[in-house]
Length: 419
Image (cartoon, rainbow, N blue to C red):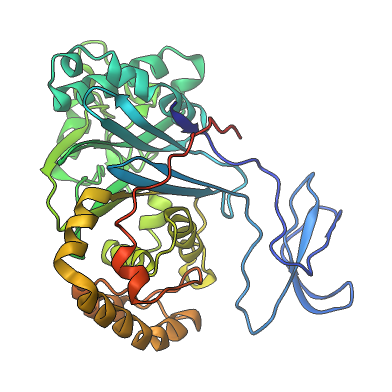
């Protein structure tokens, strides 16, 4: 069964046992003495109950944000995902997971979609991408890359057939995994990053109007680029939907001001390729790719679940010092076969050394928690896969690390989740 996530509900949730919900008139952020608490921050949102968030030390305050997470997997791969509305008034991200896109070949699909001008196109993509790929003539004859391309054009056509697509659109990054083969297709600025021996490899291209090739297409289609935006409006040059930028009937879809034509990349996975991260720009604008890879590797070494790892990345992106205000959606996919092969090479002795090194890095986490971004430390430790950013708790000994990837992921029945 496919899982399609179309954003969390818009209500705010409590994140502290001391929090209490109550009603207040609309207004800005307020700091002061509330309800007997020494210090608190209140987020005032029209028509909602509001949560008092105690401030334990300094300005280190985490906002109350709705969040959804889940995890699942099979013998060959496992995944964890998390998404949050963050500080936005609405949720426009969506995601899709299908572990049995093609049961005869064991193909799995993962996708993230970042909407703009509304959530409609992102939702449409999340709910229809599996069918669009499966029904592609190219995919059915075995051409996966062309099948992904046809699926993107099909999703774009479906969106353009809806009246609300005039101003609404979405970025899209979709990954297909089949054995040791990985295909990634994308439009816009969502990204897929592969961890190769602990080094971040970006498998997607950000499609920005200032790129010379993108600018040339935009101008040839009668548009212009100013302030890094198509017609001073849209800050990406390829997307699904956005009918107002696709009005020249004399041009093909890929020649329009905003193109739905994806860049597609295929990779042959090795034992050095242990996981990938798909995420919308809400994550990548807050954290650099290498820091994300280092964070994930460290948490996996400590036997954190993939769902917890994804939640930790969302929490990192929402740290106050990162000034992130966007929706955030993250999907972490671990390649179990590669992990097992890597652990056989490392052995128990290597695992013990890795745990000892991770314990020494705890002081770096303290620096990050105090407000630093940890990027220099993350770069220095990238070769060992030890991250320099903070996250969820928990840990294990050398035996845990040595066996962490050996057991197949528990079968989980993914459910369709609605906002």
